Amino acid sequence: MDWIKIIHILAVMGWMTSIFAVPRALIYWKREWQRLGEFGPLGDLTIRLYRFSAGLMVIALATGLWLVIGYWGMQPWLHLKLTLVLALVIQYILTGRMVMRARRGEFRESDLFLRIFNEISVFAVIAILWAVVVKPF
Image 1: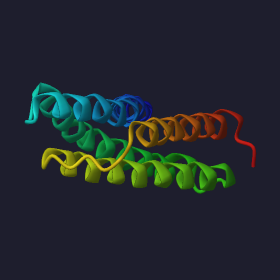
Image 2: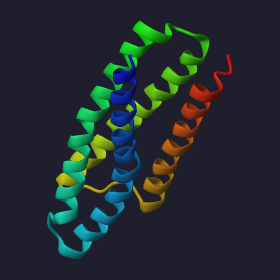
Image 3: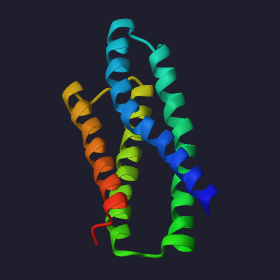
Image 4: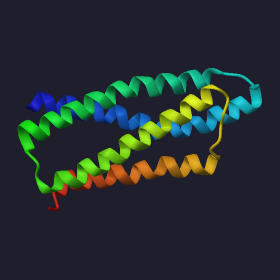
């Protein structure tokens, strides 16, 4: 079970990097698009980061479920953690939609929106860490 925990933590770390970085990268990609009027290197980097982290998300979710089923069981604190993880998955999917629109040159979201959208995930991750470490229920 220790190897599953290690894989889970590594996958979560990689996925979180993308959750924090891609909305911020969209801000700079938008500025690059406005300056160049075409698809540039930041767009390519943002798409590659999002795609790579999709695999990490799947690994994180799979190993997390493995730990729930085989190790932790459905302890009360896990309900909070899983709810927050679901919120991050939804945010990740919404980020993917923004990336696909940006690929077509559509940047609907303002810089302020993307910054706030980015920071919400930080609070969710802090709450997840609190639930895992403190196990309040």
